[in-house]
Image (tube, rainbow, N blue to C red):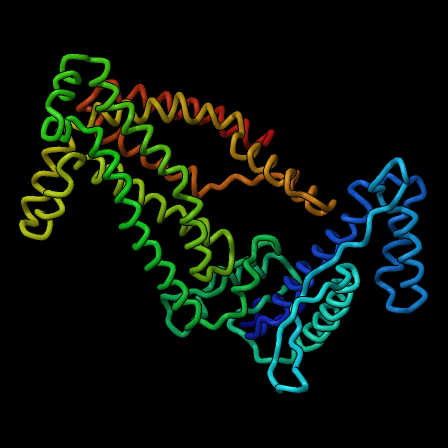
Length: 435
């Protein structure tokens, strides 16, 4: 097209050998570090401990290096019995290796105890060989459906990204490449047919989750509804009717708490289904996560909760009298204005403020720190937590529409929505700056 000068072109290969080799080497390296920590401790208390010397001895495949490694481990090992000053023993690993019986000719798989450090070091050397071969054949295999083009001038790259060069004039397949950490590398080299198949599978899993997730939400919401208590437990229903506090608790507060709990767990499952879809960048995955999460919130908050207490008959009416179902939904929705007011107030003044405590990040840190055995695990435990916009932003859009549509039915709803956005400004500003 003669728009600008091209500096380099890298076509992503169709095969996934390099990505798999990198993941396998990282896993083996973690196992080897865990075996060394079992001997040295974390951190190592020996005064003469030299990690660089130990690293050179471990990564050198010679007999002299093995003798030096054993000598260093014996000198720096943590003590099992402080009175007798005895070092801990080298960790052992149980493996199952097939052995053929010479008499019967049958294969057997007996368990055998081997040295864990020697086993994982050998596996690391094999992983290095596999990774080197994958790097050598990286550009020699069949090209995939994605390529990274580097232009000499940045202005030319932005110009090309705004052009449509696809065979169909209404389709644009050129976009600015994201950062390396924002690329889902395992999905880059997949063909377009495999990507579409994974997208359909992820969509089917999302729809199945939508149907299955409604069962506990509907069941719990129905059990605490006043209409259900009148039909199943008239005595308890009379107590609820006579006590205004209990009636407001069952009608407004408990459904809001139940819905908040279920919608807090839901995004973690949805994010896994979105990644199954084969998106090649996390920005696209975040957009799909935002759309699906918003659909879930609208369906549960507008339809499922609104039909609480008569949901099973409503499902029957949906298939037998489709027009009557929507008529019943239209009659129920205006009655939900007060519940929406309580829900927005609970989420805006309560749940958003709790985000400042970072309970999820603190629990994650405590869990990872408790199971951390190596310095690499500790670095992972203290790594910063990124804001998941696909989880937070759908609530902003949902409450905006709720405030616009229902403020004329419940005047108090508009101040509650204003409170939600005012608190959200300070909460999100604090999380973006200090989190």
